[in-house]
Length: 130
Image (cartoon, helix red, strand yellow):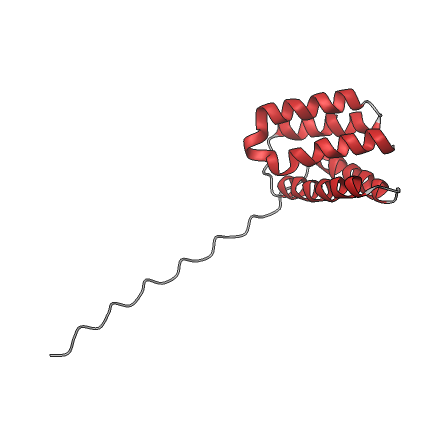
C-alpha cells in the first residue's frame, strides 16, 4: 500500500486588520503641529554632531508619538500631559516641561518609552537653542 499523504498544512491565518486612524482631539492636533514645527526649527539651526544625533532621536520619537495619537494608542491623561509639556516648552518654561516629562516616564515608561526618551532630548535641545 502507498504511504498516507501528509495532511495539508492548515490555511495561513488572515493578516490582522490594520488599525484605523481615530478622530484627533484638538490637543492631539496641537501637539502634532507644534512638535513638527519645533523639530523643523531646531533642524534649521547650526547643531554640533551630538546635537544632530539628539535631533534625529527626537524626530523618530515625535513620529512614534504622532503615530500612537493617530491610532488612539494614548490615554487622554497622557495626551493632556504631553499637551502641557509642549505648551510649557513653547513658553520657554523648560522646568515645567521637564517635570511633566519625568512624571510621564515614572507613570508610563513601559508602554511609551519609544517616544518619551526623545522628548527629554527635545526639551534639552530647545532649552539650549531656542
